[in-house]
Image 1 (cartoon, rainbow, N blue to C red):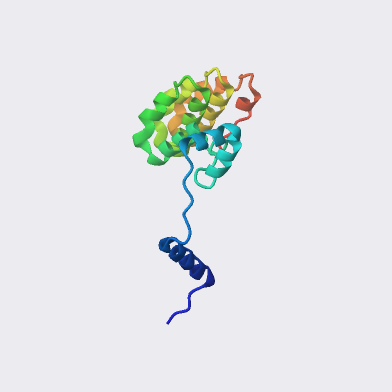
Image 2: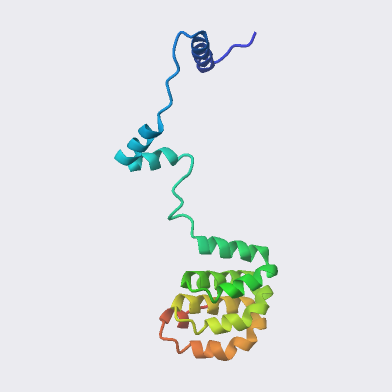
Length: 164
């Protein structure tokens, strides 16, 4: 006969007591009770859910995650990333340029779009485009005139950008 740990013994005993009707199982809370608890302490709800669903707000950067995933897919994702370079959100445009840069020379089909991004209104997009073109390498040679012009950019970050 195997020896059971004491926690298992206590659990088994508790189940036997419940099954025998010696103790009554607690009633689940009503919907009204749950809503009242939420209204009185909304932070308790977040605390209770944290082990199940952690607060992903500051951790997940959706544009970065999406662009990074597309970069891992490879050249098949280039059309989607080229479209993302024209998105209304500069964060999406920046991340699209970064993702193209992660592909390196395989991102050659996006050189024209990255060259256009060198004139983007957002300096972070221009900077990411410079880096991406540098990572593409010799295949980005058509962008050289625009890169030279980018040296005159007022945003210091663009002037000082070098491929990683």
